Amino acid sequence: MSDDNDDTSKAHYICQTYTETKGQKGAQSGVKIDKQFQYSTAEEAESRAERASQSPDCAGADAYMIIEDPNSGEVSAPTFLVRIGNVPDFDDF
Image 1 (cartoon, rainbow, N blue to C red):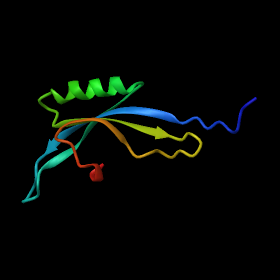
Image 2 (image 1 turned 90 degrees about the horizontal axis):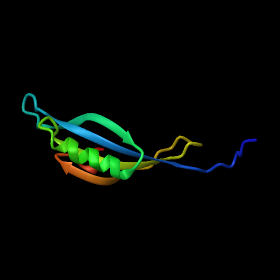
Image 3 (image 1 turned 45 degrees about the vertical axis):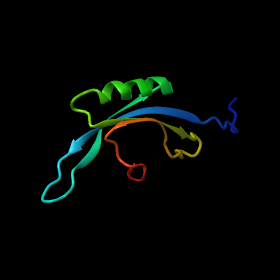
């Protein structure tokens, strides 16, 4: 028997890395998303962001959490756990 009133939300812990982009024809340089990794805990995502940020190919890394409502499919705004290096402004996220 299933419970139709199941309100369980699911937390997703994500590490997202960035690489630098070169500006073309007078445009400013910036960063773009390179890779995303999902983890079971905040600590795992933070640890991966710290390790990834030490790579010479990585401009920066974020570790963040989002909450998903499986009933509606809605996802919350990210809650940043750690932001390292050259990362986009939150408004650009």
